[in-house]
Length: 131
Image (cartoon, rainbow, N blue to C red; front, side, top):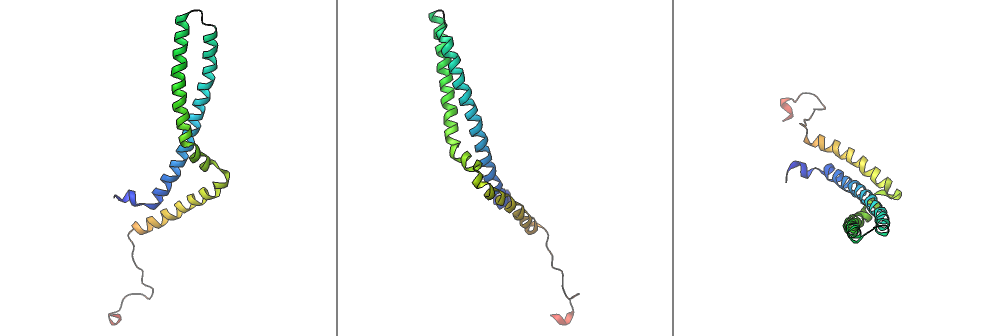
């Protein structure tokens, strides 16, 4: 394991980033589901006004492809649903605020532990009779 993988503050940041990304992915997938649902209404009207069999077949193929893409987006949305709700829940805001302040404190400790530390004598220079 490398030093970067051992850094506690990085693990906490990665966790917060993971939840933020889940919330973003949820929102993007939800937007796509909504957009695809609206497209289906347009396709149904296109189907209604299609003048021949070939045109209806083309529209039906569009509906089919749109539904597949909608299902994939809905699956992504469902996969991230609970994570996004947990992250966005106002009741959890204080927890994430404390985690972020914990990261800052942890980084200070890690920087101190990784620095060149030295001891400063409190009494002065070391005397030979102190041995």
